[in-house]
Length: 183
Length: 101
Image (cartoon, rainbow over all chains, first blue to last red; front, side, top):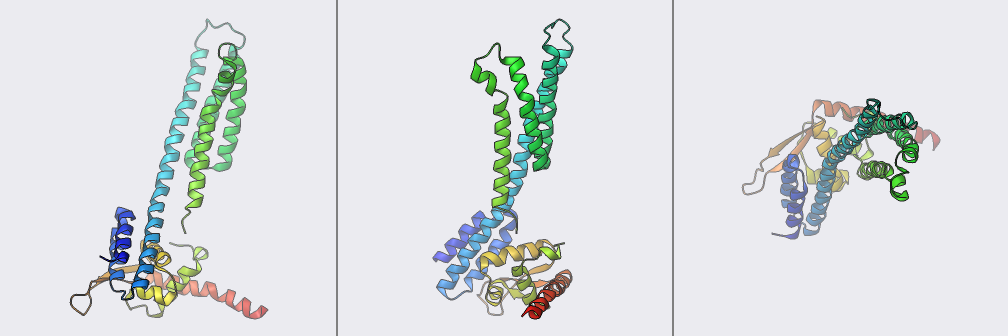
């Protein structure tokens, strides 16, 4: 087996399953090229074509990634809403900060669910606005909620860690899509 | 269906070559030589055109025994329409260039 055939076979392995017939077409075409250098150039081109097809499949992975991260974020936001609902149904809490705490928990829940929806549907501007709103909601929650009991760094950082991870995931998926945009 | 204003110049070239002899079956290597496009550019184009229904494909066995079958391509009716439209879309640009020369 010559080198160009080895390259074509590699291209066949890279091609997604539903494109295997095209891989066989490339291989058969390479067989009829008598000039060895031309056959090698043709084979490398086919390898590049196979990589492009494989990357197109990865776009589906990006969509799946956005959906997964979005669902986890929506669950996280839902947790805050459930905390707020629990606070509303606890009449023995007499702390004057409680109404504000519940308000900010609702704000955290709503903004995170909004960010999740915008991520899944990929509306970048709306997503950015929702993340800014979530960060704004987190700050008073930290001051009112955890400042008295936890260490300072943890008290400040805890709501921002999931938000940061969410933003980083969104940026990663966007950059990946831009880099491998369809023709 | 592909939007006409989204057709790249490489796609126009492939459509033009295929439309030159619309009934003839063409092979990938021959198209690559005639269009000047490398296989890494040509095959993704052919795949897109086939997916969108502008290209039909067929395995054709050679006349000489012992030679491998080859994948062949030609435009569908929709592909011929697209080729004609893309030629028409490119023509005003060529007219403008002549006017400014």
